[in-house]
Image (spheres, rainbow, N blue to C red):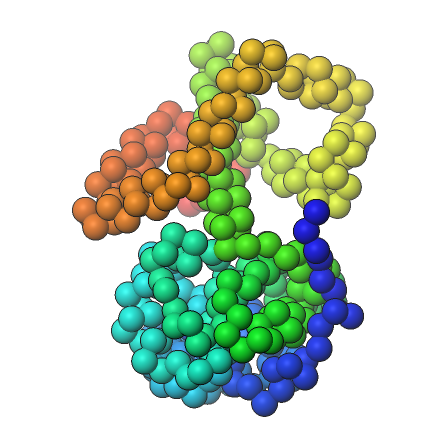
Length: 328
């Protein structure tokens, strides 16, 4: 099993006197910047002149252009989209790095796939919250913290892990636990979970119920529209996947435990499919495909999205949500 770090494992003295630049003042960037500053650290923001820069100034941060922020800082948080990061690094970051500066990634994507190769004199680490942006802030304010994956890819300074743990403490994640991982593991597991989005499964369930003659509105409410699933997911987080099942009726428990299973043959086939997805991610095939798709202007992405939005579920959902007052 991997190691997990808590507040008692981290020492802020390893980053005392360091200036931290947050590049990308979106949901994650803003929350992490506020947490770091509230922990007593010197934080600046790198941004173009847009709404993000306005927000950062309203939050009383000093805002600089990308390159100047990098030049002023010794620790740089890269909180910009993965797809633009390699070119961004070449244009704004690389020339401004000094020996033993630290690059902090929020995902392993570009390093694992080799799209970025920082100088060997730079510390390269990952601090990847397993929490949406506003939750990073709210759990810090509440004193609870949030879980993260952390990793050291390159230790030029000889103190990369100690510095990373200090940042993890300052941002609030060692309050709950920072799990030692790797750039590869974060990338593969994260992409795998995204590839297994429940959207198509829910739609198939909708199709089965409506093809059997049942009301599409009732199907939507039962499958996701009521919000009950949110509470079930919350119970899974708080109690555990199988432990939370006792909060359901006995009939529900029987249906989930007994009829939620699939046959041994189907289970074997599904496991093989899942391993195929993992291999497709791990060997770089997906990353190459996505890069080519972006270069071509995202034709397949846009076509499939348009097809999905024409599905009868979307029309029924729109009708129902208007009646429920969720849409105008």
